[in-house]
Length: 95
Length: 401
Image (cartoon, each protein chain N blue to C red):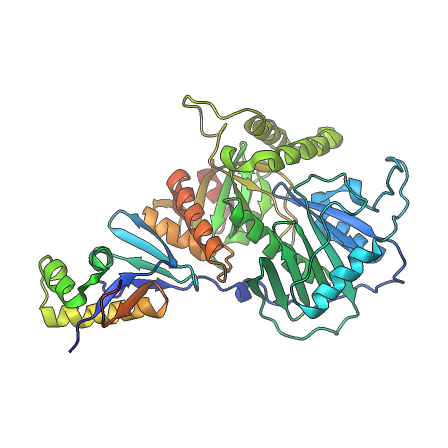
């Protein structure tokens, strides 16, 4: 399976409030509220680090979950965000 | 399963939910004589001058917007006629035909320069809307309102109207039948868009002034906005039971609000002893806010508030137009109904989510989306936001002081 790269969209407005990240799509004004786990992935979405590595290094290190389960959830998560234009997903690193 | 990776998705209330077409009732449009009538409607310190050929429609607007109408502009006074004469002015035919062609074709055309009309007495920042009235039934039955940015202009459409507004030149054109609902929807949209650029917003909330401070009560339909408005004791001045008008305070009001202060003061003096004590206090307080430069030392929030609430003519089930007053916002309450009256703290994240879900929002302009998002965050950072659970009797107002 090819690696998945994720990057935060520029078409958003976002603010961190405590442990929570509030993100709004400037495209369709959908509002997302990410908790601490979502926030970890969001902050690590630099466009160059594969999602699998983010999950392994950032998520599994802090939460009791197997890498397989975490990666499955994380993929579903980032694809949902991508569907609203909040995150970009690609099988190649972003420039 | 990870605790969230699900991320909570909240869809904001789409514009169409706020702007359903009501059942239309039209006034008969009289003979289209070569006269125009200007009705200047000031809401939230922003003046929108509505120009129409129909005296009946002008009268309808005056009835609809009542205390929010500035008297100077109806009927439009001829240049140099002085205050005593009320001769209707001649139509600027060139301007009108250009405007109507513009609407008819829905394409980008050069617009007339602001200030070319004879009526120059309104604030420079006034927004001018030229309304072309059509016979009833000529538009479609589509109920959903849409707003889009096209060539730097806002195009607003619903089955019963089409409007196009140029935010830079501060003028626009509306094509509708002679009913109050279409122009009301245009006014709400226009104010929302103008406010977003100014750091404010319209929010689905009742609001009221008590002891010179404004309190907002936000919630979806059925949450209790009308109920809490109806239960308000006599010392409470209702600003609206449906749509609250929020602007930034000292930093954001600028010259436009200065103009508002003067006009509101004029009305207050004219009404004299009929005004309530609370209203007078409010007026004094807000005048001080806008006529004095922000200090560099700490002062009470009430004198230099971050956000100010204004009365609106946008009524809900109470069907009662709000007072044309303003006051610094003391708190926003998120409404819920329960067996008792309690006030509960909410996190900033919950507060901003709730606020954003209740703001009248326009999704197709990224710059405005960002501005409203930032304004909502600034609001919850500077104004207390709490959950108010109440039972439907007047005792709830013991908590609101």
